[in-house]
Image 1: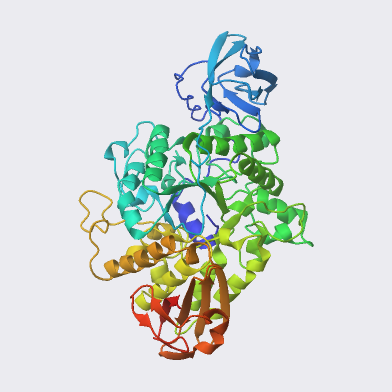
Image 2: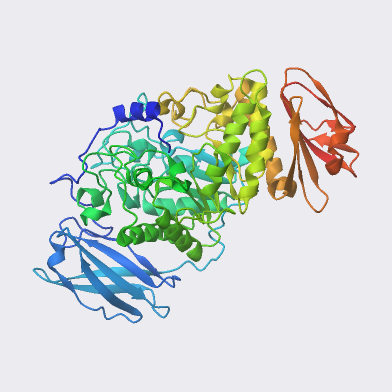
Length: 630
């Protein structure tokens, strides 16, 4: 998610502009904890349960109930567990319990004894950790990520379209701001389609509850950090979704938001304390200028506005410099991994979070789950700005050095877009995007892409030119990193993001009665596009030269850009692009550094032989992907 004045103002017009900057008095009550009845002495505890055997033995329980702060809590009689501290917060409805769960503790129910105006016992569950060390798999360059918006992909369970008690309790497919009914079951029903395409990982936009009164379908205004949105399914169904995906050979990436929540989050409606959210005398947005964070000459006020200003009127900025809030967030994202076995996190609006918190969060997640893939949205304008937010070779700047393994590769996205602009774009932008890899600890952990839910669709940006479409897809699927495709790109879905809803349309065939069903039949150009993507994606998946090989590129000359993927074992693929309107005869001797020892090749897509590497015939507006032969 990135702020641009035009697109967000359009979105804001559809949002319920503005809850007050402080929590509304008399707002909706906090949701009951799972297994607890409304009206009970405790409404909920976050985390809703915890685990024995975590590397960090401490756990912080945020307990909510009417007037709860007047209670005391007795030391539990549970072997291996001690209650270290009971803390009152500003709100009379919270207590914060700090526990130590030692390695010798066993799974079971801790009896928490509350004493006060009401004496009662709460059974808090400790669960066993999953014993499979390979359940969370992470991502590699062999993976191909399919990004989708669950509300707009497929409606697999019409029974959860309307959920009693939610603030948006209807569907309206003719409205770009309403819910349309897509859900987890709809994605699951089309695992076979994704596998046919060559996809190995699925990334839905946020699945956690967004019970906002307007435009809640996008998922980036969280109202309950511990609950799957009921219009997508239940927590138990999400656990099964991940299991079923793994059985199908598909990984799951969860889209998460660290920087802000929705203004109807129960923790905002009844704030534990005033310092859980950033506040200014009057409503203050972020300045949306992440480059102030590594400016050695920058002003502190500019950094404060970047990190502490609100992302939007209905997205209160979470105060991550508060250690209680930081712990709440860290535990939440450990909880989801342990509860589900998901394979990676995509972190929304990564640069907007407080830098010291980002370092603590990244370390805590990696300590518990070293295989978990982590990549963040750093929508920045230069290679250096982007690299600053991933693990890099730079010394700390203003006290921050990122420990995030990778980022969404906007520089490659921009480079491909610039190369395909007009009648012969700038290939050097793409070359420089890759030249900038020297700044990363490991640039192969970046995620290149062509477009996403906040951008105009790739096919429209390139003027619906199918030759350019194939060029962009060829680059995406043969470059280093883990490529990501936005849903529908493979069947030529198009539109411009004015407003964003136009690039978030329903996938044809995802709803009963759709006149077009691209899941089962793709005639004409849509079928040709699907087949092209599928061919390259499946080749990438099965050939180590693309999934783990090195990259060597040659400076673009005369509208031709050439690079090679190669391995020490002797595999080599040449990717040669002619970005002009005329066919080219390219002197192959320039590439002898990589072609030495090879005599011919074969086009990966068409299967056609390439008999001569000394002079290469490259058609106009074409990227040839050639497996070299000895």
